[in-house]
Each structure stands twice: as C-alpha cells, then as structure tokens.
Image 1 (spheres, rainbow, N blue to C red):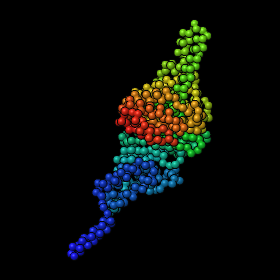
Image 2 (image 1 turned 45 degrees about the horizontal axis):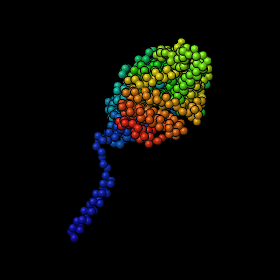
Image 3 (image 1 turned 120 degrees about the vertical axis):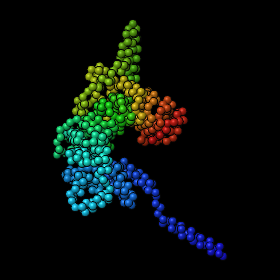
Amino acid sequence: MENGKTNKKFKANLSENNDSNKNKIIVLPLIIQKQILRLLYEEYDNMDSFEFKNKIINYSLVDSNWFKNSQKLFSNFIPHIYFDKNNKNYSNFKYNKNILYKINNNNNNNNNNNNNNNNNNNNNNKNKFKLVYNDLIKTIIIDYFEINNESINYINSLKSLETVNVRCLHYYEYSFTNSIWVLTYLNKLNSKDLIINFKLYLGCSDPYEPTDLEHIEKEEFKFKTNEFKVSYDIEDDFEDETTYGFVYEMIKELNPKYLKIKPIPCVSDSGESHLQQYHSISKLNQNYESVEIIKDFIPLYALYRFLQSPNLHTLKFDLQFHFLSSIYNNQIKNNNNNNNNNNNNNNNNNSSCDSNRNRSKDSGDKDKTELDFNKMDNFKFIDFGNSYYDEGLRFKVNDDIKFYIDNGINEDNQIYCSYSRSENSCLSIPPYSMSLWNQCLKLLSTNSTITNLSITHNCGGYNSECGFYHHNENSLFNENFFNDLFKSLSNNKIIKTLTLNFNFPEHWCENKENMNLINKSIASILDKNTTLESIVIIYSRYFINLGISKEISNLTKNKKCKIIIR
C-alpha cells in the first residue's frame, strides 16, 4: 500500500514539474544574445529601406543588456542620415521622423547652454538612455544636394566616422548636369581616410535639381571615392534636352574603385534605357577594381578597354551575342563572295590567276588589315543623349577600313539592336569588328587579374529589329562564335567564379541539339580550366532544367568545380 501511495505522489510531482517547465523562461547566455542581436543588425544594415531599419529599435527595448549592446551596434552598423531640417526642399516628403535620424549640431549644443550642475547631471543621466552617440557613429548618409558647409562641419565633428554615403534621399528623379561642382565641398573633410561612396538614381523625364545651392568654385577633388553606383531611367530628352552626359564626367572626376551601373525597369512602353557612353567610361580604367554593368550591353571596344584594367578583379557585363554571331556570318558571306569572284576570274582569264589570288587576300577579309586598337580610340567625349532626334549623332558604318584608320573609332553610340524606342539600331557590321573581337578573346585568355567574370547575352528589347526572338535565320547563334568564346575561357587560369547567362529564347532551349552543343562546350571549359571553383549557367529566364548540371557533370572529368544551374 505504501509503495502505491509513493508512486502516486511521485507521478503527481512529475506532473507539477512538467506544468512549471511549460511556463519557465529559459535565458540564453549573454554571449549568445549578443551574437543574435549582432546578426539582426547586420541583416538590416544591408537593406536600403529606412522603414526596416526603424523596426530594429524595438530590439533595444527587450532588457538592459540588449539596450547596451544595441547602443554599440546601432552606431556601428546603421547608417545615420543627415540633412538640414530647415531646408524647404524637404517639406513635402513623407518621411517618418522616427525613421530619419536627423542628427545635426543642435543636438550637440543643447548641453552646452546649461550652467546648472544639477541640470548637467540630469543630462548625463539622460545620455545613458540615448541609443545613438555621435562619437560612435561610423557611417553617415547625406543627400547629394545637402553637401554644403553646414553638413561638412557636422561630418568633421564625428570622431569615429569611417564612411560617407552620398545618396538621393527622395523619390524624385535627379539630374546633376550643372551641379558636379557641389562635390568640391568634400575637399573640406578633415580626414583623408574617409571612404566616400555614391549611390544615385537618375531620370530625365522630370528631373529635380535645386537652383538655390551655395556657390563654390570648382577645384580638383582631393577626396577618394570607393564606390560609384548609378541606376537610371530611360534617357528621355524630349522636353528639356536633359541627358546623362554628366555620368561620364562624374566618373572621370571621382575615379572610383568600384563601379556599378544598372537601368531602372521602365513601366512605360519605351523599353529600358541604354547608356551611350560605355566606350568612354571604359577608357577611365586605371583605378577600377570592380565593374558591374547589369542589364545593359556594352560595345566591343568597351570590353577591350575594361579587360585592360590593371587592377580589375570583378567584371560583369552584357554583350549582344546575336551581333557577335552576325560578325561571323558576315565574314562567311564575304569569303564566299570572294571565292565566287575568284572562280569567275579564273574561268575568264587563267593567265591572271596569280594576280587575282593576291587581290583576294587583300579584299577577302577586311579585318586582315593590321589595326592598332590602343591608338584608334583617341577621341574626346561626346554626349550622344540626343542621338534619336539628331541624325548627326547616330552611329554609321563605313565599309572602308581606311576610314577608321584615318578618323579613329568611337563606339559610345554603337547600337546593333535597339534597346528602347528612343534609340536607333544599326544592323550593319563595322569592317574592324572581327579584329576587335579577336583582340578581346586574346585578352580574355591571358587576363591575369579578373577572378570573378560574368557574361550575359542581351538582345535589346523594344524594337527587336534583328528578329532574334522570332523563328528565322537570325535566331541561331553562330557555332564558331561559341567555340572561340569557350576556347578563350578555357585558356584563362585566373578566373575562379564564372557566370554565363545566355538568355536564350525559349524555342532555342527546346532544341536538344542546341543544348547538347552548349553543354559539351561548357564541359570542355571545365576539362581544360582547373582553376574554376564555380560556374553559374543561366540558359533562359523562361527555361530552367536543374537536371542539366548532372548532364554536364557526366561529360567532364572536373569534379572540383561546382556547377550551378539557374
């Protein structure tokens, strides 16, 4: 009986313990709490939305330990925003006061106006409950048009500051045509070790540019620019002839290490915009360490110059593959025509056979003329933003190679397949293109600095004059083009990460012969290039077959490189 009673008591105690465990709060060790909080702050620090960043303030209210840790992390990770609260330009912006941290000198001067010791003590106590200490701030965001004496003085007061991010802090489209000189104020920064980054959004349809800016004489920039990122809407100069020519001027003056350019998806029927200055930008290549041109194609000459950048480790760009295929097709046609002419000449006059053959060597391939591309693009920058309305600014092809030898080459406005309705296609092939492409292939093979390479096929968009996305002869890539491209990538021994975005039309991917050709070519790259650590392959935005990675893996002996299909 006693044993039975004892068992009942033991079971009752177990039941009570289980109930109490359900309501018990387990407190994690402080070091784990701190790491969790740090990860949360780092995650939000990578976001651009100030609304998200505002929400993390709630983490500081969990308990006293979380608040103390948040004080340090918030100053280190969260970029703080400066602008003049009295500036009328901001009166209509719908920003939450809790989201924008309007830190200015007034905050620092409040304590200095008090001579009463008790008040001072009270203020010191209040400082313990401040989430942000000016002396701990490491990153600050400043609006481009708020770069002036007042903002520079405040930035100089931040003792721990490491990075200044120049942004556009409202939703209106920007134009910087007449205001590059504003950046001269940055020469007044006390610390020459500050990292200056730019992230700008451009638009021409209704550009915003203040007229009441403080005047300062333009002088050579003495500060160092790390990043220059620009996103731009369609270059529409119909009303006020505003163009993006200032982008080149800004890059030239700022001389950034990291360059990223990307068009903003256009919601209208105009199509996305193409920047007609990449050849010029590529010539400013001495300081580039990373270049990313996303969803916009570059001309061959720009690729040639980017590949010559002495410090470049990351290069991401778009090419028009159908233009490159057309170069090969054009060469085949020229050779066939020359062979036919030679045959006719041989039948008509056998005695002149040798002379005809000699002439055919000169005229068979126009690109066999020796060209020095290091000297042929010595031109001054021209703003081609008005090329749609000004026929004189449009790219035109001259069949005589001597024309380019005498006059040079500028491919800033070279557009094979129109990207938007405000641009003009030129489906003719320049006579120097094959030679220039061959030089690019050599540079791809021998480049000794680029470890991260991404190549995307860009077919243009709006007009599709080439007909690539339709079922016709232009919808097939030239096989020799692929062979040459893959051969150069196979020979390179520096690239560790390679991305190939073919952006094929869906009907092209449905052809098994096409896919087998590509898969075998990729396998050949992996067999010859043992330096590659990962290769990312994107066949089409409409076609995803994850099983292809196994097919390629079965075709190659290289098991080291990771194959990723997207």
